[in-house]
Amino acid sequence: MNRVWQLHEHINTIFTRINEMPPVYIHICQVSQICTLLAIQRGENVELAAMAGLLHDIATLRKHDVEPYKIQGFTKANHGELGAEIAMEILIELNITSQEENEIICKAVGNHYYSFTETDNPIDEIVKDADVFAHWISSVSALSNNVRGNRNRWDRVCRELNIKNKQE
Image 1 (cartoon, rainbow, N blue to C red):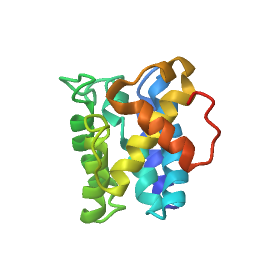
Image 2 (cartoon, rainbow, N blue to C red; image 1 turned 120 degrees about the vertical axis):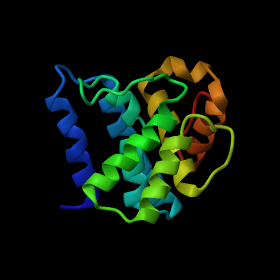
Image 3 (tube, one colour; image 1 turned 30 degrees about the vertical axis):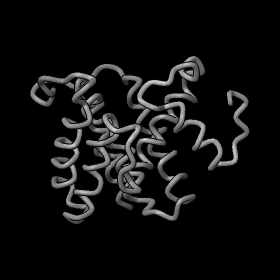
């Protein structure tokens, strides 16, 4: 079984403990798929990008979880930082990645929310771009917003993927 699938299966186990699938589950799957596409396009590590996409909102996913797994002190503003900690715990538990890979993935998870206007390493940028792209394809009304520089990312990713963006 490949590493991305092992991680995906682990995340699925969270849903055996809750009553309904929160929308964030669909979002993390979309982001992981878009990360895969962008990593292929950019010549980056596809597995690391896909795993970072699956884990980027793990704190948001875990806020829906039940005791004793539910995280405390969750806010939208700190979900990246909390997510990086949870992601590291999951990756260590699964033992499917090296310490260096864990650090790359968890840095991308931690950076995906705060630094939309900053440029970080390639995997960080893939996760940020995929997150913006997934939010916007799920909500056309989001196109009118330019929160945290998202509009610039949306436009750039559309150009990169040769998608005719009628919103430009």
